[in-house]
Length: 254
Image 1 (tube, helix red, strand yellow):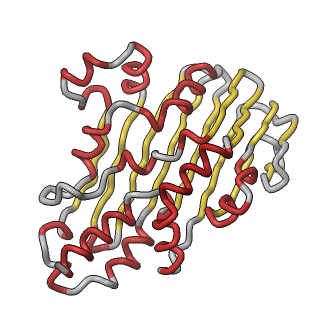
Image 2 (cartoon, rainbow, N blue to C red):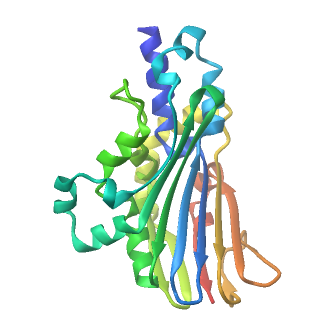
Image 3 (tube, rainbow, N blue to C red):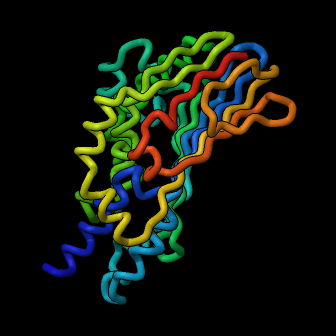
């Protein structure tokens, strides 16, 4: 029973974005397209939690799995799932890739979700629907451990991303937190935040936006503007976001 508790503790903690280093990176092109990468590095959480494991638990098959793979969402989905998708969802899937690098004995657990948006409208659709992407079965199949049906599910990493409201045009990138949805997210994950804090697991959050032309205005005082005015960098952590959700608001005109 004790062994089961530690296994469940390990995977529950990893299942929330509160216990990972999160980095969002946007590369806006002159033609209006944009490459977006959501990177989730859970290595620090793995390192902390592995110290709690006994040698007998570390020697189980669940902790010896090594994965380093990249796959296209749409092509990897079963026909039954593809047939249920709307045209917009299918296009979104075809323009998205999932990269997984996992080696628990070496304290490595990284996931990156990449998407190429062809236009500002495409980017807004992607950002508004990322958390609701209808591919959970594929994500689970790639990231969970083979012999642990209650294992890590990457879909849960994006569970809270629906608390943003976006407005994206050829000359602006606006993102505002919906405080009601954010508070609901905190309520769902309060125990996980408390657990991470008790384990002294830091929770950094970094957003980097690269633009093809100079930025005219940025409204967030914590945002750092590069010397050439083509890059905005926002660095914070989940503790600060919980205290003041508006720290994540961005209104960029370019």
